[in-house]
Image 1 (cartoon, rainbow, N blue to C red):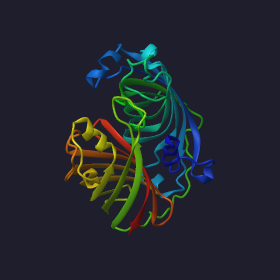
Image 2 (tube, rainbow, N blue to C red):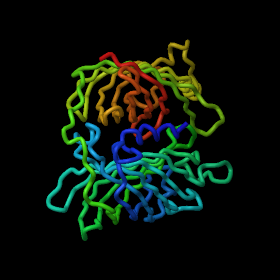
Image 3 (cartoon, rainbow, N blue to C red):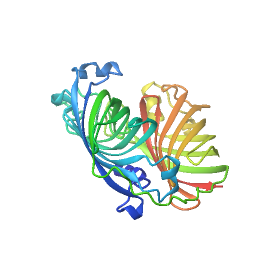
Image 4 (cartoon, rainbow, N blue to C red):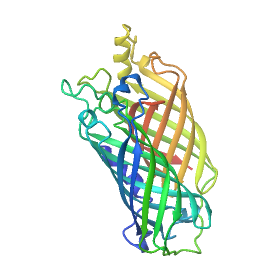
Amino acid sequence: MSFCILPFLILPALGAKPGNGFHFSRLEAGSHLGYVWPHHPLLDNLYQGGFPMIQLGISGIPTGSRPWHHSYNFPETGITLLYSNLGYPRVLGHALGLMPHINFTLHQAGGFSLQLRYSAGLALITNPYREPDNIENQAIGSMLNINMSTSLQISVPVSSSLDVRAGIGMTHFSNGKMAVPNKGLNIPSARLELVHHFNRKPVICGQDYQPESYDQYSVAVYVAGGYTTLYPPVDDTFAEFTITSTISRRLSQKSAAGAGADIFFGYSDRALLHQQGTTPHHLTGLVKPGLHISYEQIFSKTSFILQKGIYLYRDYQGNGPFYHRIGFRHRVSQRWVMNLTLKSHFFSADYLEWGAGYSFR
């Protein structure tokens, strides 16, 4: 099911030909020098010093045929292939990731530019946690994982067709707690990259474009579901459900902010309460209402969602009072929206929310 994340990233970015909004014009090759950040005591053994990650990619500049191309000043967009032995192949195995990416220019002076790059896709980790063969890998419990990366870099042209880019970044591997353990791998790194331009002059059309119209305020209701697993690893999975509503104010063509309310209902809380030696008196004890604030980065029909919330009430208190949501929403019609978000408690994933919503604009 994790493959469903790819359309949320590819749809706003890629097209098959210039007339459809995009053309490939750049070939990338680079290397990262990173290390496993042991952000949890159970991961201390995974730090084995620095190791390389190899990156290949193809990218280009949007043609200007869609309003968001102009709003974001024609960001570079493409697909990245990432490989690494993670510095500890006996325990962690090898990682192979495929990630759509988008690269924003924050500042440009002459040929120099400061860039912010986001990537998100899927990765295979070849040696996840297994009993009794590989219990040392407490970071990753499944072969298929979500792979996310962000970096800040400087790009310098060295010839008419070649750029050198250098910067720092963070790469993350996780399965959204669809299998445990799922502490996740966080890999800070320094990166160096060469970019070959087939054609530095982008094909720009739609110069007389009209900005998309939008309502200043909107209210949306979403219904989602998913499942989670618990630690220590067992075969049981637990159904989780969410109803959420957000009122948003559009700040610009590119962003919106708002606030809303959530109702969570999950059977995993009953198992967690049993582990503590208590039992909810009835199913209403598994209901967790909450309030959240929201930020939305908008790319035409697709949005990147970031929310922070606080529980108003719940029987199980083990994860603390705060929860977070990060993910994507894609508008399939004027009113209906598809939803894929990850609910978490800071660095601890809770479950992936798959669902749909209706917007009252």
